[in-house]
Length: 346
Ligand code: SAH
Image (cartoon, rainbow, N blue to C red; front, side, top):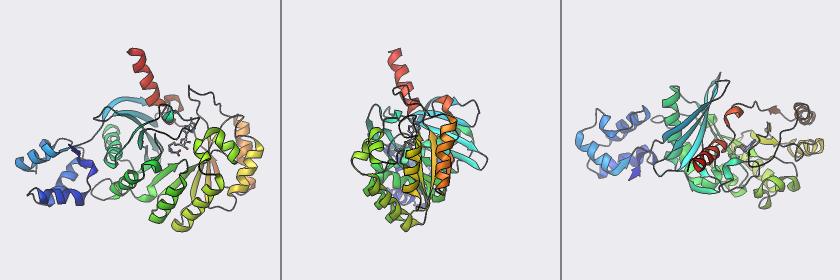
């Protein structure tokens, strides 16, 4: 059985033709699916014989909701979803005044091994397909009863380690027959797989690229991110500069501040030197403590000092509001705590 969400309109039209059906049925079927009708037999304008064919060839791969958590401020909701094969992922919906955002997962687990991140603790199980990523948005919209207008690829997984599927996903949700989410409303976050940044740049998409930098020297970065052993910061920054030259897009650098590791004034100055000539924005994120590690966030004063040093270098920066930290909204924490609670129950 094939997940129909892994087909785009052209592929489904083709399927219709090959199966003796009218091509326009493809658009009708997608119309139903994107309007939350997830059973072929409830698609009223489709003939019974076509429904039978569809049903014997495809399934509509919407994940099942396992749990939902509301943050105290009510603006953030976290969902735990289970796909047909039992894989569990999480995704987060955030309500802002300008619209609703979703943070989607791109892999079940992750193999990048960042020391502060819960997603990677159990390693990787598998990649998600384009349709499975899209389905996170469809399912979430159906629960919150609101249109999602912004997508960040910052849930579990490394998007550039699942390159083909992620690009197909970005193209899919862009279509007007599907979710109509423009590239400028999509942010892709990567720990910095350098060759893939070049590939992405050559596509000249208008998405926002976010780089999980988290350190200003290789020595510091290697302590928390194994990917730093493969690509050094100079190579990474060179790839970013190439990305900017191809797309004209400003890059976001994410910097999770960890007390005693990367939060000192010297690190801030090095970061300033590194980024001062680059079209960028820095997101300072007080690290979320994960039960399995002992990383702590710096004090508010130290975060402010760090931010002010970047200001002195003329670098645009913001300290990220910690939305949903009361519901384990940091990457991978929910899936992890769910797995642990199941272990306890067994
Ligand atoms: N693999 C991609 C996207 C997923 S992680 C990447 O590395 O960018 C999304 C962001 O959350 C990354 O910047 C990641 O470094 C950060 N992150 C993960 N765990 C965190 C934690 N405990 N506290 C703060 N940020 C965290």
